[in-house]
Image (tube, rainbow, N blue to C red; front, side, top):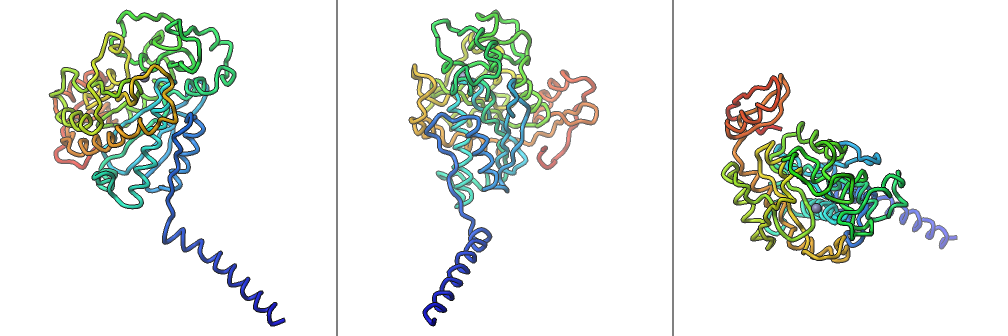
Length: 384
Ligand SMILES: [Zn+2]
């Protein structure tokens, strides 16, 4: 009997200890863990699941939203990371087979958020300072339908008959794993209103290079353009995967943006990436070209991976993608923190549109908007 009673007391104590430890751990010492596993074909579903897990682990640092829907109705997920006033726009997987750029962006959020929660330095960068001065507004997967086609084949597509009729470009391609366009066969990095009348090699829907019949014909590029029109960003980076290099390092207007030069110099020193030069093929309809011309702010296209003939880039080789590029966004964040205040604000009627540090750029921008005016706001807080 005595023994039994002792056993009962021991059991009650054990239960109390087990129950007792949970509230203590969650309130006083929150447990953080890595979320993103990058070493496999990173799917739309992986991204959504990981984003939700990250948001619940770091609610003070991460907010989730959607900027619109893809052709097949998937949400174009927006991850706002940080809580500073100066927004920086990042996107990935504009091209379907380059989905490792989505892996890169999600892995980056995961690693930075973890380092922020468990310390504050990341390789000498002060994450607390950076993430309280800037917010990274990230659309990790601009082309989720195309990514689904690349990873799961045509059987997984909603309108298989339509997609089966879209030819491959170039014609020697025979597999959907090399697809770049969205599911309508429009190249989302050729669909923006930039040098629209340039003669192009592809005249109709194709696996790559078709610009669309009209600018912003696709819901994905429209969603990005609408988002940028209504949220003032200070810098823009689009992540692609071929060539370990940067486009946009000098578009002849480098003097317009004092931070562009140091941004590029520091990124090159940190990553070993090279400067890439736009060709005729990359001079029309591109996201970066359109954004740079519209908002007159630092805009880069980063090609993350080594140039290899295999596509998609091998997932198991993710470390070789991450290592050189792991500090790029923090460099951009630090440079955006140094940018001059943008005191020339453009309003359309009473709606704030965008702001510039140089009156000439504000006037040039205002010209494109009906009923707009430029207002100089002396020494304001940062424009949100
Ligand atoms: Zn690309």
